[in-house]
Amino acid sequence: MRSLRHLGLALLGLSVLLGCASKKDKAEPPAPLTTIEKTLDVHKLWSSKVGKGSVKLRLGLRPASDGARVFAGGHNGAVTAFDAQTGRKVWSVKTDLVLAAGPAFGDGILVFGTSDGEIVALDAASGEQKWLQTIGSEVVASPVIASGVVVLRTVDGRLRGFATATGNQMWSVQQNHPALTLRGNTAPRVAGMTVVSGFSNGRVGAYDLRTGDAQWEVAVANPTGRSELERLVDVSAGIQVVGNDVYIVGYHGRAVGIDLATGVVLWQQDMSSYAGLTADFGNVYVTNDFDSVIALDRNGGAQLWRQEALRLRDVTAPTRYANTLVVGDYDGYLHWLDPADGKFVAREHATKTRISAAPLVVGQNVYVQGDDGTVAAYTVRNGAS
Image (cartoon, rainbow, N blue to C red; front, side, top):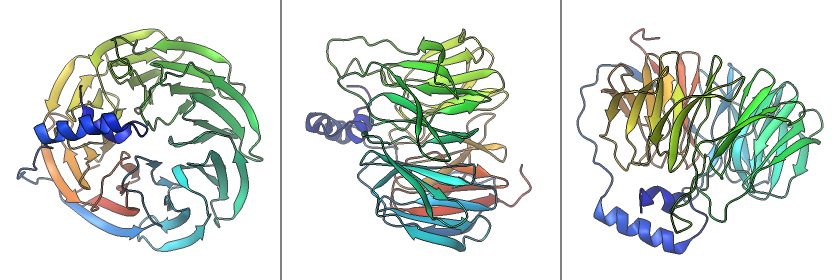
């Protein structure tokens, strides 16, 4: 019955699990926020709204950027391009689609996935629809675009590649799909001509971006236990590639460092996460399934520090920004942590609803989207970089 608060939000419509989650919440509520000593001068640049959000669903909607503009979509199909510095609306369109993930930006287009099993490409300069493809399975993980290919993972366990110019499917990879899965939002990662993705059966694999041919596959977690709940092993959290290494964490699994070229496991630590991780050239930072933020040594996986003050606050994966780590929580707060020791250095209330996706860094600014469609931008004014 571990971390059932997250499962109640993430599992696909199972009332028994939601009931368990409610009991868990009553037994141990989210940790209250305590006063912190603010040592970082964080400034809010702007805040705006895109369409209507969905506070009840955990979606993969997260801003994307081309450097000058920030793009965001709402669950009701609205898509807006904002000036990254001022928040001014550059253009806005209504797609009449039920957007659930994205956008991805690349090759001059934006790509969203929908709850109705479609992917749509819009012109990034105008919002004009370029193509629409029906794929027959819900998309709750943001796509990624690289070298003329749109790559996405659907809830039926498939990883697929589509041509950015036409939307035609180029290849598909199928993994065994468990009977019970988390409603995850794992976006694939591309390094050169290799795409890395996690799956609901606890495996992670590397595939050729052009053909989908497997280069290697590794089990991050193996299902154990009597019940389907106990056997959940989704890799439904963020994947990071730094240099020649891949870092990934699974639910009821492990945090693992993997050699990108060979698939050899470099180190592993028993750890369970639904939110995910990030990494820099020194450390790996994980939000575990009880919402502790943990720093691991990138070279060997040894734990360096643990911040437990956000317990059960439904914390996002960390984002590395301006010599800090930034995470969002269920109440719309952004928390800045010192990556050296995990101490809080700033806090801002960005939105009145949950922040489901990790914040996005563009240049000197950080952007976040709340589940109600609020998009907010922050910067640091004391010269941190």
